[in-house]
Structures are given as structure tokens and as C-alpha cells.
Length: 134
Image 1: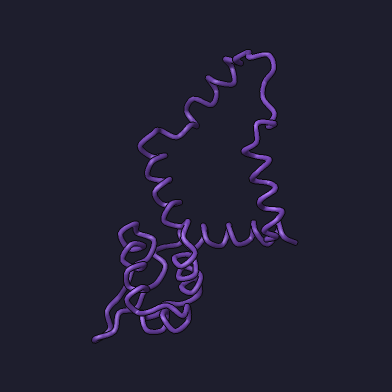
Image 2: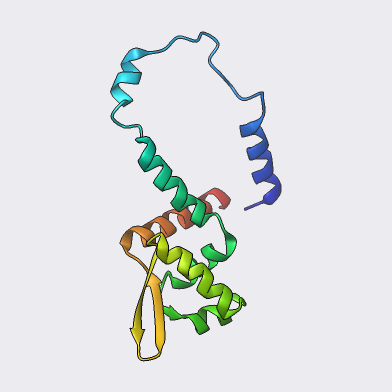
């Protein structure tokens, strides 16, 4: 993504020139019909925690490495040019959020993305960015 364009988009989004309603009329039909669609606060909090977990470059790189196959900590460290300790720390956080899982094979531990939901989320975001930049 063009960093300059992304910053411009963010600045536009956060600027005081963003469009607002001029009439301040609440459309009760719209509010009522969407009432069941809005996230309850506890679920929104959980989602925010997951997105917060994904808001880290190193964790996203680990997820991308695990997208197509399971890997051990040593392989992940070599691939991402991180220390094994740093990789283990990030994997511990991802595991706590149930974004990755692991299996033990003798003395080796192999990590993988936890399930199809995590795989699909990663794939969807990647496709979205590819379309936006294409």
C-alpha cells in the first residue's frame, strides 16, 4: 500500500471536514431494523482484542508464515529473522487469543493457524489489500 495515500485517507477520515448530518433527524425505522445487528459491547470488546492482537507487524508476519503450512519455532525464527525467544513470545500471545494452535512431535513443537476462521480472515484481508492496491 502507498504509505502516503494511506496517510491521506486516514487524515481525511479523522479530519473535522468529514461529512456529517446537517438535519440531526433520527430515522427510527433504520435504528429499529439495525438494533439486532449492532454488536453487543462484550462481543465488540472481544473483537477489539483480536484486532489489537493482529495490529502488530511481527505477529502478522508469523501468521503469514503459518498460512500455508505448520512450522516450528526454529523455522519461524529463521524465516522472520527474529530470535526464537521473540517468536515464542509472540506465539504465546497468538495462542492465548486462539489464533494459533500447536502439536508436539518428540522435542519439536509445530505451530499452525488455529482454524479455518483465522485462515479465511487472513485470506480476506490479503485479498482486500491486493484489490485496493491493484
